[in-house]
Image (tube, rainbow, N blue to C red; front, side):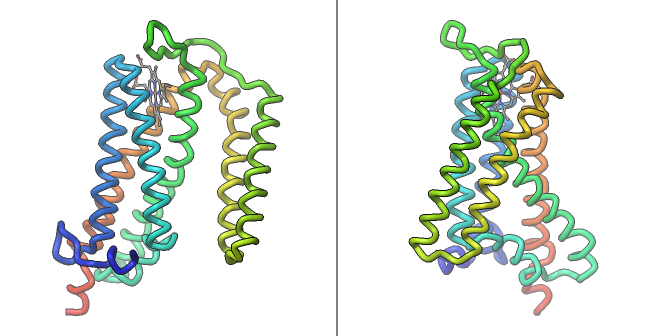
Length: 239
Ligand code: HEM
């Protein structure tokens, strides 16, 4: 698989198949989210909910499959080795953009699933259509504890699975970090409830922030792609 993704790309001569595929899919997913935003703005709430759900599931599936195939962090490592431009540009322009891009992707992967769950909680179905219901939306504290226990249980199962399969400690650490992040986000809900008690307003405000983030992910991934494969490809540096 690694070899397949390193084959020459189809968009520009210096690109790889992995980079082209990754960039094109990033464009497709971002556009799907922006269309879902436009649907919500036009009051097409059920279409909005379906498209947001489909886009989120496909984006997460793609991320897991792609980064698993290319070994986690390949994108970050690719910068140093594959960047053909001057070191000042790498340090002052490319690296900060890549850092912002990865941070936004991580935040987007947290906020997206959060909004899917919050979207269902904040909606009522009226005549077959989802409608955001105004009013305070708070989760029952007992439910919180149950959710945390589930997270703890699932993390335990994954760790046992890692031990049985003899996975390296890095894999165990990765699972710990993933489950700790999920537990933290569930905990953050308490803070968010205080800050934005109205469920409908919470969905609209956090939804817009997330959509703007998805648009910025597209901008930063385009900049990264252009710098790596069009403006400063490795060939230009090595002759
Ligand atoms: C990644 C997931 C999601 C994001 C980023 C998102 C984002 C948004 C945004 C930005 C708006 C406000 C549009 C505007 O006025 O600018 C909105 C409205 C809405 N969303 Fe979502 N949403 C998501 C998932 C969901 C889900 C899963 C549901 C339902 C189960 C849902 C139901 C609604 C409804 C009913 C509205 C109101 C539309 C109207 O004003 O008629 N959303 N969403």
